[in-house]
Amino acid sequence: MRQRLKRVYRELVIDQLCKEFKYLNVHQIPRLKKVVINRGIGETTHAGVLKSSVLEITTIATQRCVVTRARKAIAGFKIREKRPVGITVTLRGERIYAFLDRLLNLALPRIRDFCGVNPKSFDGRGNYNLGFKEQLIFPEIQYDQVDQLRGIDLAIVTSSKTDKERISLLKKLGMPFLKSSD
Image 1 (spheres, rainbow, N blue to C red):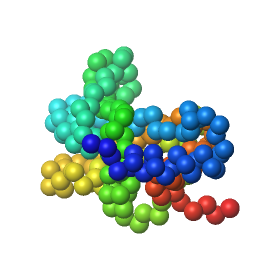
Image 2 (image 1 turned 60 degrees about the horizontal axis):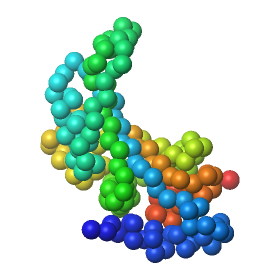
Image 3 (image 1 turned 90 degrees about the vertical axis):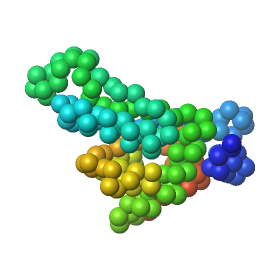
Image 4 (image 1 turned 90 degrees about the horizontal axis):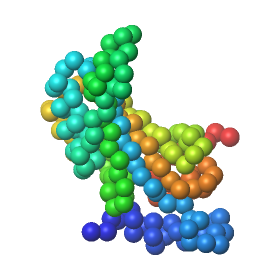
């Protein structure tokens, strides 16, 4: 099943980007490579925290997540070797467009007092990083099944070379950026 956002990208965004940046080759056109969803687990002592976090991230991403474990013990942070410290999932292909469509059209409008996302969250290497304070903005998560509010980090990885191309790509896909005051 072809995703709606991918169809918009293929039919509209590619042509607009070619006109704006005057690409000579089809392979120069920026595209979405992957979306990485992360969550750190602060409480490593409770097994229920890990289980509920895995269930939530799997529900949000529609793909099974991987539990990341500590490589070595750090006494100051009360972390032991091979203890779970986070959860990550990487979306590629059609799942990128399905997730971004739900994010842009369902999740972001549910944020209280939402004015847009920060256009300065690019890292200079093609990644746009975005963080949320709670998981309840996603409509897949049931309010009564949440035991505690936990944050989620997103990294949207593109193949573009400059920040101007990245902003243009994401704007054309529907990312609501804040209006700059300059």
